Image (cartoon, rainbow, N blue to C red; front, top):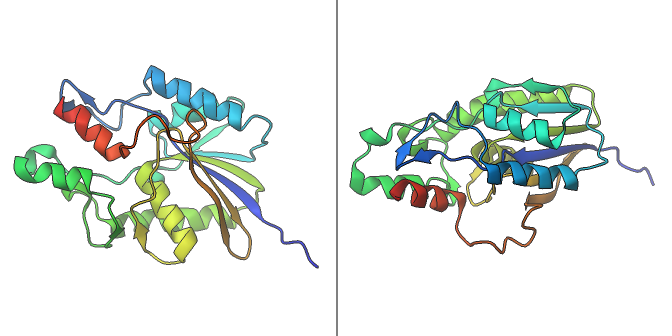
Length: 219
């Protein structure tokens, strides 16, 4: 029997940040980790201790770079802006009575490619930039990669790995600082999804990240 040769992708979501201050959105391109987020990243570093990464991929956003620096302090982070989070529209342009539905339920079910994230970038547009970047990464030579990215981007990659289609499975929850484990050979093997080293059985709460962010906004 020939043993399959597979490469390993550790796909992380950046650790906790605060997207709202006093109920007002902050610039997502500049937001940095909270103290809780730094603790989450340290827990991920402990879980991945001993793993040798050939590449360290980020989107270039400060929150991904900060997380990567804690998890893999000896790595040289690469910035791939095409792997930045799906872009939302302006809250001020969405009627108040529609905002909760569009925000909290943005990643519910199988999300159509023409659906727009909070009236911003569409799922199809997200695939248009994420999948070529993924193809470019897979064309390179490496054995083990750590990619510290974003919830929406990770959902797109996980969905593609499972379906081999531009099908966005929104119900993949991505907790802050979580780790997904994927192997790549002739096909994709999804070994683990949404592993949060600081809360392995997700006992802290039962809200989604979007529900939690909505609660922060309403406060």
